[in-house]
Each structure stands twice: as structure tokens, then as C-alpha cells.
Image: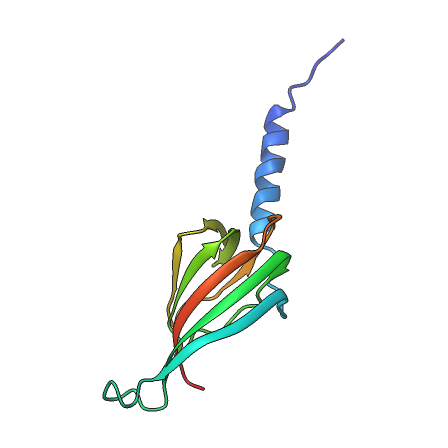
Length: 132
């Protein structure tokens, strides 16, 4: 009887599957997402050159199996604070897990999207400079 060592093949398959999952196509629409405005401040009267811009805070929830479509951060820098849950961010083809207490920065060059693969709701508190 002859035995063949397939452990290397199996490991390579797992690595390839992980790469394929992290490079999956981003969604084009939000799913399981609710947005509640918390507040906004007109920055034009506060800072020279900021006319027409607001400092905005929102409360966003994402249900299990939910996701955000790819947002546009051009002219809209954002600090995204994770209040509760665990969420996966896909940025430049790389998947990274964040949990409650983490902050993610998104500048004008950021292209990313989010997915909740967990069993609990994820709660975000994003603060951005926004042009309504």
C-alpha cells in the first residue's frame, strides 16, 4: 500500500481560499444597515475655507450577515469608531477584523467596505466632514 502526503496540497488550498474570500467583489448596495443622525455642525462659520461643509456624527448599526457597499471618501474624511461587535473591513483586497473600541481612519484615498460575519449586531459611530 502506498501513502501520499497531501498536507501541503491541503494547506495551499486553505491559503488560496482565504485569499479568494478576502478579494471577493464588494457589494453595490447596503444590507442590514440602519443609520441614525446624531448631530451636525456647520463648519463655514467655525473655520475659514470650510463653507458648505459640516462636521457630522451618525449612529450606524449593521445586522449579522449585513454589509456596507463601497462608500466614497473623496472630500469626506472619516473616523469610524466601533462601539460594539466584530466586523471585517475589506481595503485594497485585504480583509482585517475590528472589534469594539477600535477606530478606523478613512481619507480621500480610501476604498473599502464592511461585512458583519458574526452573530451579533455591529454598532459604528462615524464622524466625518461632509458636504451635504
